[in-house]
Structures are given as C-alpha cells and as structure tokens.
Length: 249
Image 1 (cartoon, one colour):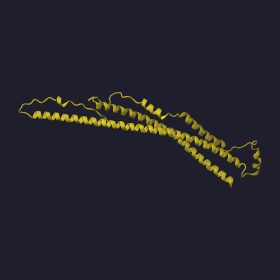
Image 2 (tube, helix red, strand yellow):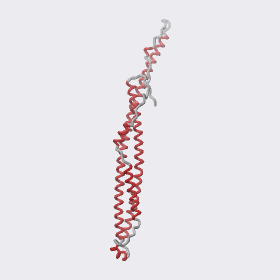
Image 3 (cartoon, one colour):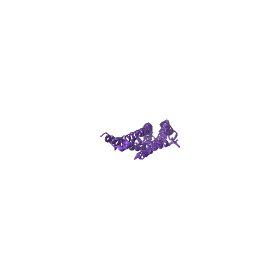
C-alpha cells in the first residue's frame, strides 16, 4: 500500500473573475470553485491524518510481533537446554540398566543352572568367558553418547540477548524517502519516520523467523534420539523383568 501526501494550491490564490455589473453569474461560479477547492484541501488533510494513524497502528503491531518473536526464541533456547538434560539423564539411566543387566547375568550363573556351571563358578576368573550381545549393546549406546557429544560440540548456543542485539545491528537503513515530500509538514515527517521504523521492524522479524526455523531444525534430531533411547530403555526393562521373573520361579 502506497501512502502519499498531496499539496494543493491555496484557494485564495485564485483570481477573482472580472465581471460586469450585468453578469453576476460568472463571479458566483468562481466563488463555488473556490469553496470546492477548500473542501478538497480539507479532504486531503483528513486522508493524511488517516494515513498517519494507520502507520502508527502498523508500527505498534510490528513491535508486538517483534516482542512475541523474542519470547519465542527464549522459550526455544530453554527447551533446547532441557532436551540436552533429558538426553544426558537417559544416557545415565542406560548406564544403570547395563549395570543391572550385568548383575542379572551374574545371578543367572548361580540360579537355575546345572551343577557343573555352579561348580566352575569360582574359577570364572581364569576360564575364558563368552560375552554374548554385550559388545553390540555397548557399541549402540557408545554411538548414542558420541552423537550427543558431537551435537553439543558443533551446535554452540547463542544467547537470546546476543540474537536480539544482532537483529538491531543488521537493520537496513532507508535509501531515500518512502513518499514524495509535497506538504513538508509535521504529519508528513512523522509518517516518513513511521514507514522507516516499519521497514526496519519487518527486516528484524525476517531474521528472527530464520533463527526460529534453524532452532527448530536443530531440535528435531535431539527429539528423535530421545524417542529412540526411551524405546530402548523400555525394551531393556521389560527384558530384565522377564529374566528376573524366571529366576524367581
């Protein structure tokens, strides 16, 4: 939408029509034209005031959107930290599950097995042991821990304050007037300032939207890893419960 201010010629500058005493109608027509121009000038001033009010509302709305964007970035940054903590806690839980799994395996060496294995149990330290599945499980979770470490090392967070400060530094400056200067009054000056402010706010919102998109894409793999770790932990717990139940029978 293009808003322009209009300058009209003062109605007083219209010369009076030179008429004779016998011809009054020409002078009356000139008076009507003069009154019509006065009405047009008032309409122009009204339109300029409406345009100024619209520009003020636009600036206010853009400032509100900018504040909401800052709050969204802060929430996403906090969510990213929480996802990291959840991932670390799940890794610790998996380590505990591995320890419990080893204890259950050790109990199975003495419960519900032939006497030969029980007799050879004291000599386990000198007999070769066969580890079934332990290397595979450890490798899976070592790979998860390595991916977490790589993600935390490669994706360094930038504080919300630094991002907001960056938005202010990247704002572009106006290359010229947004509207042609015709009236050159205070209304036109404020309208120009509001349009420049709106342009800068739109540029800031654009950069903020890009950062929000990047933050969401960074968090998607973390959510997928957490979901996979939860599924593995659930399956491990179910399997260990079944093994303990068989030992207690």
